[in-house]
Image (cartoon, rainbow, N blue to C red):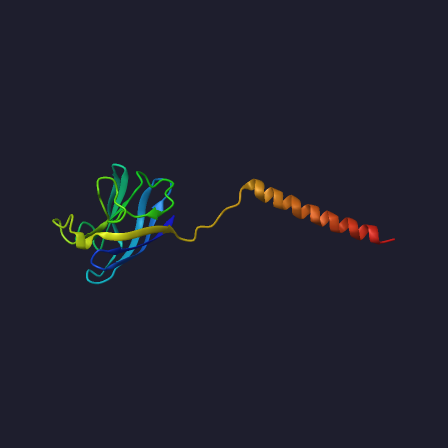
Length: 158
């Protein structure tokens, strides 16, 4: 399932893009995130992921293992069945007062200017699938209407 990710960093930079989750394995399989100035960049490489206590985090980088990178923390322990919601940020901290944000180098942890102040993940193109019982009832209704019309036509012909 693919999610739209949007948010804003403390320094005013906007974060947007998508990430894709394999619903069976509960892993992030693809990212395509963009960050505006002052730290503009496109992040398309999944760079580490996994549960972190009661949170799940994954990284997105321009090049695997290189800085800058973006760390996204989600307030769930697994991505199996994940359906979107708030991304951990300065206004909605994850357990342990952790937040998502941009890492410009290995010493950048905790630099408030690079932390998210808001963030959400929304499913892309989510559509409702009707239950089989609902489909059966609608089919039965359609058949009943066809029979009713056929019976009325048969009664009118002398």
